[in-house]
Image (cartoon, rainbow, N blue to C red; front, top):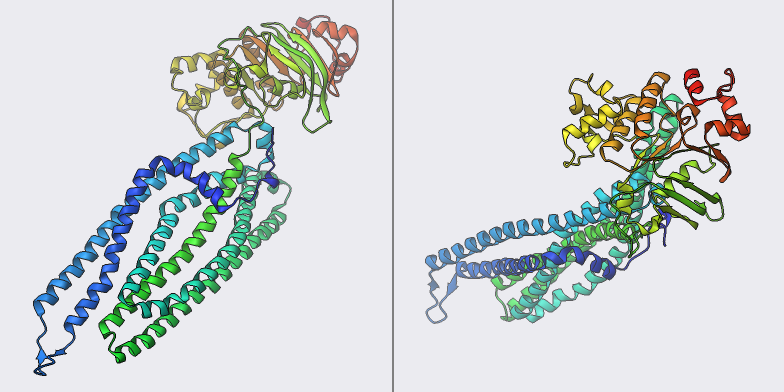
Amino acid sequence: MASFSYENSDRKMSDIELIKKTWKFIAPFKFQLLFALFLMVVMIGFDLLNPLISEEILRLLTIQVDEVTGEKIAIDIVKVLIISGLYFVTILVHSVLIYFNAMLLQRIGQSAIYNLRMVVFEHIDSLSVNQLNEIPVGSLVTRVTSDTNALCDLFTNTIVNLIKNIFMLIAVVIVMFIKNWLLALSIFIFVPIIFVSTFIFRKYSRANYRIVRKNFSIMNAFLNENISGMKITQIFNQEERKKNEFIELNNNIVKSRHRDVKIFSIYRPFISLLNFVAIGVVFIVGVSEILKGNLDFPAVYAFYMFISRLFNPVQQIADSFNGLQRAFTSSERLYNLLETKPEVLDREDAVEINNFEGKIEFKNVWFAYKEDNWILKDVSFTIEPKQVVAFVGATGAGKTTILQLIVRNYEVQKGEILIDGINVNNIKIESLRKNIGQMLQDVFLFSGTIKSNITLRDEDISDEEVKEACEYVNADTFINKQEHGLDEPVQERGENFSSGQRQLLSFARTVVHKPQILILDEATANIDTETEQVIQQSLLKMMNIGTMLIVAHRLSTIQHSDNIICLQNGVIIEQGNHQELLKKRGYYYNLYRLQFEDQEVPSSPLKLQENN
C-alpha cells in the first residue's frame, strides 16, 4: 500500500487528466451548467448586435445626397430614435443576462467546491497517524483552504470566462467574414501570432505558479509550527533566528511572484501592441476599400468596434490562463493528496462489533516504523477480560507502540493481534475504535465548551450522562468551581486549564462514550502530586469499566494491575503482578528501587499505597 510522502506529492498531471478529475465535481450540476452556457451564447449574440446597430445609426446620421436631384436627403429622426431605443434595449437585456448568469454560475461553483472540500477533509481524516505525521499541518491547511479556493475561482469565473471569450472570438470572426472578407482576413493574420504567444505564456506561467504554490505551502507550514511553538522560541531567545528564517521564506515567495509578474508583463503588452497594429491595418485597408467604393465609413467603424471584441477576449483569455494555471496547479496538489491511499483500511470482509468482552492477544507480533528497524520483536501475551495490565520499560522499548497497534493506528508486519478471538484487521476500524477508549499523555481540547469537549458534539449524549461521567472520574471537583460549569469556554488547546484538569476531562470524555477496553498512555506524567491523587482515585473507579491497558513511568499508577509486562528493546523480559515482580528482583525490582530508594521495599500492595 502506497504511503504518502510530502516531498514526493507533486506528480505532474496533464491538463486533460485534471479536467477529467474536476468534471466529477461539476457533473451533478451539468444541466444548470448547460443552461448557463445557453445564456452565455445569448449574451454574446446581444453583445455582437451593438456594433451592427451602431453601424446602422451612424449610416442614418450620415448626410446623403440624392443621385438624381443632387439634393440632401433629410435624416429620418424617427428611425434613428427607434434604432437607438433598440440599442438601449440590447444593452439592458445583456446586463440582465450577465446578472442571472453570474448568479447561476456562483451557485454551481460554490456547490461543487463545497463537495470538493468535504471530500478532501474526509480523505485527510482517513489517513493513518503515520501518514499525517509526514505532512506538515500548514500544507494540509493550504490544500483545504487556498487550493480549494483556487478551484472555486476556476468553477465560478475562470472556465466560464474562458468559454465565453472563445465563443466570442468565433462569433466575431464569423460576423467579420460575412461583413467583408478582405478586412476580416487582414485582422485574422494576427490570430496565429496570438495563439503561439499564448501557448508560450501558458507554459512558463504554469511552471512558475507551481513554485509559487509550493513556497506558500512551505510558508504556511512554517507559520503553523512556529506560532504554536512561540513559547519555546521566546524561552530560548531564538526570535532573531526565526525572523531570519521567515525573511528567507518570504523572499522566496516575493521572487517567485516577481517572476510571475514579469512573465505576465511581457505577454499582456504584446497583445495590446497587436491590438493597436490591427486597428491601424483596419483603417489602412478600410480607407482603401472606401476609395474603391466597396465600403462606407460606418462599415469601417463597425469593424473598429469588432476589433475590441476580438482582442478584449484574447486579453481576457490571457487573464483566464493565469487563473487557469493557478487552478490547475492547486488541483494538481489536491488530486495528488486524494490519490494517496490510506495505509489503514477496512477489509472487504471486515465485521462490525458492537461490544467487546475484552480479551486481547498478541501472537508473535513484529513491528517496525521503518523497514527492518524492529520496535517489537516476536511479542506474545494474553490479557483476559476485565484485567488491568500495565507496560513498563525505558523510552523506545515499544510500550506505546503496543497500544497504537491495538487500535490500528499502524499495521503489524508479522504476527497477529486478536480481540475476543477476532483479528483486529478483520474488524471495522470505526467499531474497533468506538469500543476502545484512549486517554493519552498529551490531551487535546478543542475550542468550545467543557461539555462539547466531553461529548465531542455528539447530541445523543445527554447532560445527565455528562454529569455522571464527570462525577465518576472526579472531574466535577473543578468543573463545579467554574463560573459557567459545563458551559465554561475552552480556549484553543485548553490553555485555560491545568494539565491535571485537562486529563480529568479526557477521562470524562472516555467514560461518557462507554468503551469496553480502556487505554491509558502516560496520563499522569506531567501532573502534580495533589492532582495525581485525584486521578488515582479516578483510575481505581475506571478499572471496573472493562479491560484496561496502562503505560506509566510512575509505578504508583500501576501497583493494582493484575499483570505488569516489562519491555526492553521490543522484547518482553518479565511479567507478573507487582508482588511477583518484586520477588524476582529483576528489571522491575531495580526500577522500583530507583523510584523509591528512600523507602523500604513493601511486602504488599497495601503497604505500597500507604508509603505513597
